[in-house]
Amino acid sequence: RARRDLQVSVVAFRQELEDALERRRTLETELFKAIVRDELRMEYQPLVNLADRSVFGAEALLRWNHRQLGPISPAEFIPIAEENGYIVDLGAWAMNRAMKEALTWSNPLKLSINISAIQISRGNLVTTVAEALERTGFPAQRLDLEITESLFIDESLDLKSCMEELKALGCSFSLDDFGTGYSSLGYIPKYPFSKIKLDRSFVRRSIEAKQDVAVIEAVLHLARGFGMSVVVEGIETPDQAAKLLELGCPCGQGYLFGRPMGSAEFSSQLLKAA
Ligand code: C2E
Ligand code: MG
Ligand code: MG
Ligand code: MG
Image (tube, rainbow, N blue to C red; front, side):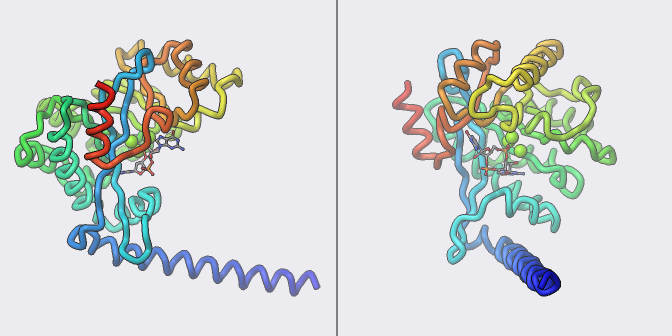
């Protein structure tokens, strides 16, 4: 009987694996068509000052709504695009679209765009950014590039010179998903970051646990020492916001302040708040 159960679960497992592979293959083929089919768009989520909740920036987030499969999470399709290199084109598209849309807003907010390592190793990020700025007329001083902490584990990347060139154009940088990359802290001051984005895994339902408070305080201290600002991701409740403010955290992002929204909605929220 035990043997039979095992056989059944092996079959079920194999089926699951096949389904997952099949979906992956489908998404891979479909993703190549997404741009021309007009299935992609950008959404924007406010970045706020915790003290008065004023919006100082927007993070651009890519959305894919497939004609048959419906909405597909970037957490699912970005890794696929990274693996096959299509993220180079996708990233360029996202950047151009976000700059164009952000220029229609009433406030000259900072625009944060997520950058993948592959855009540096397999593409020419400096050229892509320079061309997007040129084509759209978006001011480089308003552009912030979010780079994930885990990227620093890949030492083969010539990240530093890439960042220096972009900085010379006027761009700033944020260290995204901080605390999830397991890399050493020593690298941080070697790169021109102006912000640390503390990963949302450090913000639980309530920030009462001693360990969470200790981590947040340590990150605030570290950032201050390096002359960097801190944005805490994933703030969902007023209690979290109050606690973070009390701890001295300057900025935040999360559903409490606004979900990711299309450009038109984002812009009308800005007008309402003003
Ligand atoms: P990320 O850069 O860390 O972006 C923040 C993610 O947290 C977004 O998920 C956002 O919707 C979500 N989020 C914001 N506030 C809250 C909250 O209060 N609670 C919870 N539970 N979640 C919150 P999203 O849009 O699904 O994107 C996932 C990841 O996909 C992003 O993580 C980013 O790494 C990647 N991504 C999205 N767009 C792009 C893009 O244009 N280029 C690249 N390279 N990566 C992108
Ligand atoms: Mg990000
Ligand atoms: Mg990210
Ligand atoms: Mg993040």
